[in-house]
Length: 119
Length: 114
Image (cartoon, rainbow over all chains, first blue to last red; front, side, top):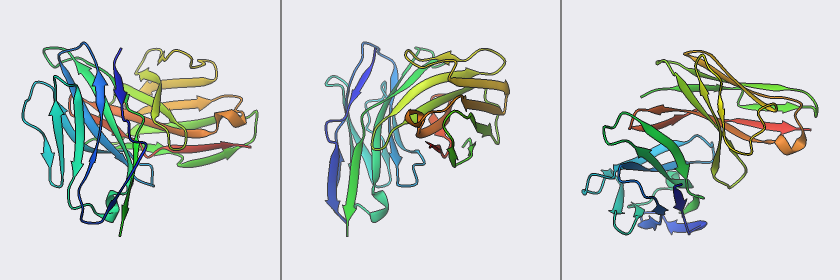
């Protein structure tokens, strides 16, 4: 079974600063995908960024980037130039896939990190 | 991307009554829908997977008779909380998996049982 661990229950950052959220996972699978989801106060789950395990290059989406360390099973999220709208609960998530990419497992979530951006 | 419409967004019901939550796929056909439960400031816990035209698959510990899932068409999956009690009060979310891209989530339903 896969597990996802987010060791930071709460984080805070000043507006315009940079913050990094940690995530580690445990799996014996070789093919999988990793995600960061954001859940703002509205509670709508929003995909922030995704990473394919077979890609060594770290994914980036504008101000959001990840540091994917496959051997260490680490998948941290860096938010640059933090904005007030980044205030939300962030979830790291894991999904297995078969080698052909035609079959996928369930989405396993970490415990979440509540991020507060202060003005 | 895919859009999942979930209704109602909030519902208050009396203890002992049943509540139905609907999730509709607006611009795609969903053969599978996932149902999650979330308590405040906690993670999402998968309750069950609904499959169009067949029985839902429930996670261990989830009461099948309390949480009835129906997926009668390719655009509608429903979760019915039967004989609701205050401990069933929670936030319920449905989602659809878009291949390897990720999951699209409904906006959630806040259920309060009084």
